[in-house]
Image 1: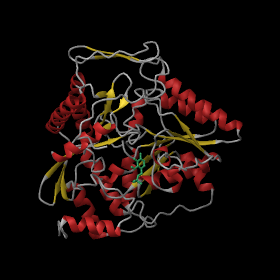
Image 2: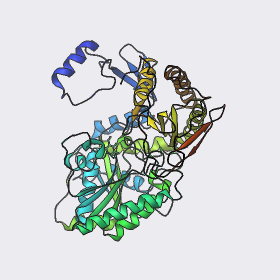
Image 3: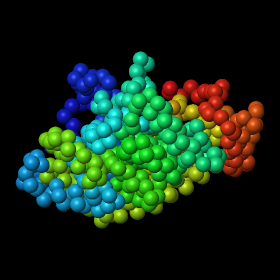
Image 4: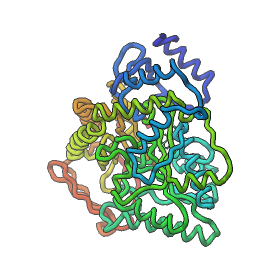
Amino acid sequence: MFAERFEKKETIDLRKRYIGPSCKIFFSHDPIKIVRAKGQYMYDEKGQRYLDCINNVAHVGHCHPDVVKAGAQQMELLNTNSRFLHDNLVLYAQRLQATLPDKLGVCYFVNSGSEANDLALRLARQYTGHTDIITLENAYHGHVSSLIDISPYKFHQLSDAEQNQFVHVASSPDVYRGKYRADHPDPATAYADEVKDIISKAHKKGGKIAAFIAESLQSCGGQVIPPVGYFQQVAQHVRKAGGIFIADEVQVGFGRVGSHFWAFQLQGEDFVPDIVTMGKPIGNGHPMSCVVTTKEVAEAFMTSGMEYFNTFGGNPVSCAIGLAVLDVIEKEDLQGNALRVGQYLTSLLEKQKEKHLLIGDIRGRGLFVGVELVRDRLKITPATAEAQEVIYRLKEQHILLSADGPHRNVLKFKPPMCFTTEDAELVVEKIDVILTELEEALDLKLNHTLTAENESNKRKLLTDENGHSGVLHGKGSRQGSPQQTKQSKRLRT
Ligand SMILES: Cc1ncc(COP(=O)(O)O)c(C=O)c1O
């Protein structure tokens, strides 16, 4: 087997020539050529090892031998569509269902997160007889037409984009930068009430809500953790209007949050979505995905009279791989590892927050962690260029991390679940050095005491010698205007 067929330069040239220019590459001015991977490490053509902090698809570790073996063995024996009886399909559906609340008992197997979400919309519309969808600000749910329509993360990038009249966008339940913040007495209710208002407005215009869709924790949207109780209240409003709740677990499912197998379970036992969509980690890199729903929704879909057929969905190879992934999660206690290492990583990052003014917020569950960088903690001015600098400098030191969110200023950790405490220490040590240098360049000092010009209207932040911050939030204090700072020449915007 060839690890490398072409010199790197030739690969770049061929890619430019034959691959669509909108298919972007990481680190475009100096892309990385990866030729093999194992566990939480990726290796370039020169054998240089990179620590992977971003590939949540390689959930149980890159090229896990059990998963590779399960796929290869089944491929040697049979691969065909689900119109033939096969035990792998039913066995996998049974195993997957056992991880979910009883109510969620019917599976449809598809091949990508986009296909899963597109099918979820069809199911919702068929079940409810309604058309309108409520989605969240900064959400991304996939690349097909139906999902670009409900993905503000994408459609906001188009200057002449017209929002689909059936789509309603609710505020992201972000208690750090959003409309209602941590100081609000009840942000869950405040954000959910906004959904209620959206429903009333839609009704006044003759619209009817088919579904509310949200990632259980927003990923591209900036590693947002919705306040507990938000989903319950939203589900209540949406169901009252005849709609259903779709939880997109494409990024965050399969034990990543540590304390639970599914991220929607962070909201509490009393919350069960009507549809859950899954992708990325489900096949550890093999293209498979799934939609799980209730018997009622599945039966309504049946009444349309249209057969659902998917050539590759639920084939014996995919199901063998899916089973192996579940086995490895269990055998290696990767959910437990996500909890332990995630907590450790978060605690290390919290210490960095005490030290670095550039860190505005640390938030996460398990091995899904965000570090929001800000130029000014008071005005929460996004430190976009600084976040990019951190990413580039880490890459130079062979650590792969990314920055996302609407301002691309949130460092995003979602590594393979075999990530270790040593890996966490290494990446945090490197971030510490980079932030120290950036802060020197920006003249950000911990002994600065920053106060708002108008304390009644803006957030007030006091830093003590150790950099501990006391943040008070004022009403209406959304994002402040960019602060003029000395900019490091090294910063790449
Ligand atoms: C939350 C979420 N849903 C759906 C998708 C679409 O998945 P895919 O790229 O497999 O079609 C993505 C992809 O990034 C995603 O992040």
